[in-house]
Structure formats: structure tokens, C-alpha cells
Image 1 (cartoon, helix red, strand yellow):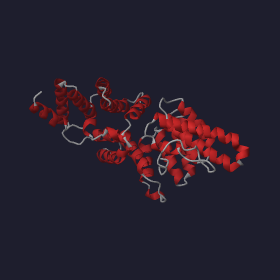
Image 2 (spheres, one colour):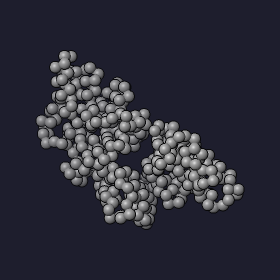
Image 3 (cartoon, helix red, strand yellow):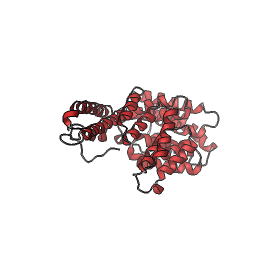
Image 4 (cartoon, helix red, strand yellow):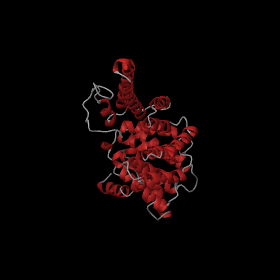
Length: 360
């Protein structure tokens, strides 16, 4: 290809809205961990074509970053296929998958296919000239939310812009609620919590989403709204007793509320449902860490020594599993390094980790 032709393709490609143009830096994410999480998400997306299409598209980009162009192509094609299953009114939803395919074919040197998808995208734009598309902004927001914590602020902005165009769209209300939950520090004044307000709105537009209910319960508990929080947890557990994310957050809720053994039982059930459970192992480690503290407060080390030893061994095991399954899991590494001799804590320091990093 001549330099003129290359410039022609590159100019058109850079105008697209897709993973390749969203300034996603592979150094901002643990790509192997991200891929594992996306594969787990596919299991949760069963029966949800839109969610599965989004997950396949993101997986395609991650596979490209990992150098697996053939697998990337398969994922982008699967994303387009699932999107088309929505019916005739799916053009805007195809923008991201078609953009990924155009870029991938360009990198693979298949310029005929690249141009074919560029032409498909031109036809979509001619049919729907009013941009930006809320559908694309929503897809971008979910990508930022999934890719790295460094992009949470960008995710919020995407969801806000999408909701300006379609305020009642459930998925984007849910995305904004999750982004706010992850970025809003606990406030003394409940009235100042935009996360709580948005979680309520997201639940209103997604009444079957039990993960949102548990997230709201966790946040309400920080404001001592225990009655409503417990009611939401009971609803979520009754409706989604096997959902790994529900169990994980409910486990955290019970641990924060002092019900450590109940939390441990729930989290161990969750371990049976997922293949890469770094976050669940981390929560279990924190549960055993708290159990050690409770045992020390309940009696002397002499009378509780055997129980404390067992709890410490479990704490070490689960935190080490968390750090092995998710490389760069700094919070879990910090918890693993917590000193215990003579103090309430978990394990003797085995790794050099910044001591100032706190639990997320």
C-alpha cells in the first residue's frame, strides 16, 4: 500500500467511534485479568444479547492488544452477529463492532474488508446523521468502567451524556450508578450523596437488577440506614441466591455489619460459581482478618490460640490466592502484608507492599 492510500485509510479510521479510538492504554490494565473478567461476564450475559455483544466487542479489543488477531476477529464478528439479532433497528448499536472490525482488518493488512466496513459505517451515518449516538456513548461508558479504575471519571461523563439523550435507558442509568458508587467517597451528609440518588433511579429503571440493590444497601449502611439496607439485601438474596456478584457484595455487607461467619459461608458458595475469583478470595481474606480480631477480643490468646491459628491460615490462603489470580492487586497485597504480632491483624508481612494502601 502506498503512503497516500495508508493516509486515506488512517484518516477515515481515526474518525470512528470504537475501542481503537477511545484512548485505551494497555498499560492501564492487567489484560489477562481483564480477559478473565470478561469471560466470566459472558456467563452472566446468557440470554442478554446486548450485554453479550458488548462483552465480545471488548474481548476482541483485548485479544488484539494481546496479539491474538484471529481470536479478536472472532469476537468482533460475534459481537456484530449478536447485535444484528436485535432486529432492524440496530444500526447505531453496530457502530462499535463495525469500527473494531474495520480497524482490525487494517492491522491485518486486509484493506478490502477494512474498506467494506468503512462503507457500512458511512451508510449508517448517512441514515442517522445526528451524532453522537446515545448507544455509542453508553457502550463507551461500559468499556471505560470495565477496562480500568483510571477511567471511572470518563465513564461517568459518557453515561451522563448518553442519559441526556435518553434519560430513561436502564443500562446507562445502571452504568452511571456503578461509576458513582465506585468514585464517591463516603459522605457524612446523606443528602449530598449523588450515588444513592442514582442507585435508586437505576433500580427504578432496572427492577430485576439485584446487584444494584446490594450496592445501594452497602451505601445506605454507611449512613446508618440499616432497616432499608437489610430489606434490600434480603430481596437480592431471595431473588438471586446464586449470582456471584450478589453473593460477593452481600458477603461484604454482612462482614461490615459484624456477621463474619455468615459472610464467609456466602463467599465460599460464590467461589463455586466463578473460575477466577480474586475479589471473592480477597473478601474472604478480610473476613478471616476480622475473625482474628474478634477472637482476640473474645478471649486470651492462650484459650483462643488454635482458632486464631486456623483463621490466620485461612486469611493467608485467601489473600495469596487473590494476589495470584489478579496480578497487581495492590489492595490485597497490602492486606497480605499486614503485621499481626501482638496486634489485631491478619498475617505476617511476606511481601514488600506500600503500607498506606487501604481496602477499596
